[in-house]
Amino acid sequence: MSKYSQKTIEYFFDKYNVTDQKQKEKILLHITDTIYDYNMAVVSFEKSKDKYKQKQLAQEIDELEEKIKEIIDEAKK
Image 1 (cartoon, helix red, strand yellow):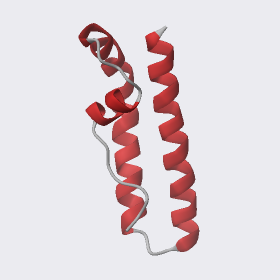
Image 2: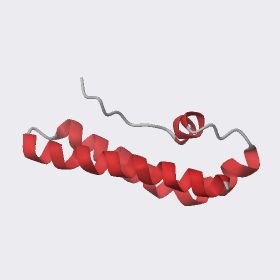
Image 3: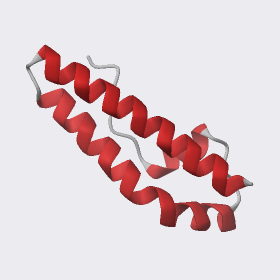
């Protein structure tokens, strides 16, 4: 099993402790596309049989997760 799996927006809200509904609404506008890209990269990773391609996708997934964290951190300020 892969260490990567598709995640919901609520997963990221829980992970980064976003509980305020107004804050969630504000973040949602900025984060939806990035989470979609994250999940599509995970799907590609799971389907890929090429180890080199998987390595590239793993890096992309990690970068997208970091971007999601940055978006949430910025919005929480």
